[in-house]
Length: 590
Image (tube, rainbow, N blue to C red):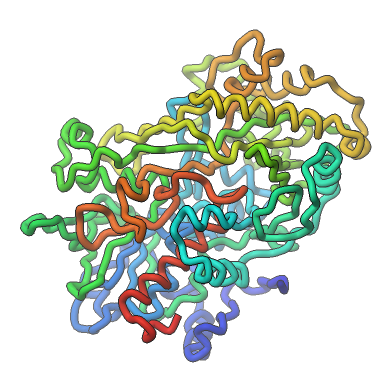
């Protein structure tokens, strides 16, 4: 595909699917707006009367769809629905367009480290003792991830019960706007050659498809190192029918419980000044609130709104709307472990470009060259950093607070090199999510139970053995120009990095199983909490209530492909088209 040149932040190409409104849309986007699109504004600009121009009839102050969360699924979903109906998107974060930590590959680690109130990333620590993050920005996880783009395999699509033709139409809709072919760095080429040397074959070249062997995937970073996020899929929107409010934190979904089934009527949200507002759904048949707040935010919002385990809600005195013991259950995170490979010289920065898709259900990837920068001296980066020894002298109890507050301990550079990553594809171990309080701004309590199932642990051991072969292969050593190190020494580097809060054992470099448990980290591919068949139906409607859906990764019982963002964005488009066709048939025009 052609590489897009973003010479001006306000000038974008309109997709051909909306060519009939091209001139109006071009004029609409050329008007100066600090948020790129004039349909984006701060939440404090909202009032019931001001929404009337966006309603379908123009006579009331309601919306056909209210999307909670303008993230990886929410943006393509809203853009699609706005073709025919009025849509309000409520996003708790800001915009990514002017945020340098989001926009540039070189700042990837800084974006994850920044936990200020205006950050695109909100840190949390699971009860497993693993550092993690959730997005807080228009565009969601596509603004803070490593950018790798790879589709799900056909088996995943079949298990999801999706229409393969519509899936195959929806992926290119995303790819035309924001996906690029990477220029491989020397390190990524070395990884490619080493994977092939140790038997991860065949080489499948550059492809978006999920196929066994070694391949080069897509990226949402262009050739200038600039990130293109799901927020840019709003370029497809009908600006006359879409309104996006940023810094709009939804506090709860509102129900009418006077009938036989609870019926959603709207939502209550607060703006950046702390003022509350109520947004109302239209009474038209088919109008819905759609939760797209992610695997942490969506089950949290259901519970805060009165849908969830009865005892959980009673404990926090949340009025019960509908009892469902499955909300917040079935949580999973793909465990990842790394081997740190030192380098004698600075290495070019790169995120995921090459991937080994093994038949054992393990993916092997790499990240390189991220060093400390002056502007980030008071931050902690997590696994994609070379500063992980920063907590080595801080007691465990204080580490957790240090990770959240970032204001007491100065970090020092401790490692110069790169990372080889292995990630389990289909973890059997499952966890859960529960509320700590009724403040939507606070993270809920999350447990993933990494390696609780022995099969997961055994697969990790096999994966570490594979990665050990990769980093000691002839091709790899030719590139790094380092002496061949024994596995024990390489594993020791990872253990000393203190990349999580889990206790370390004396034998964690001699026992690979212990190494897996002690050094587990996240690659931010957690999912579940609103599973199909337990919380939502196959069409993502919340069971037991009317006019409410969940469309995001919380409905997945497995993470699609090597990296889920491609499929989550595709799902936003896919479900938007499905909904339009259900309501309008051939008149939908999609």
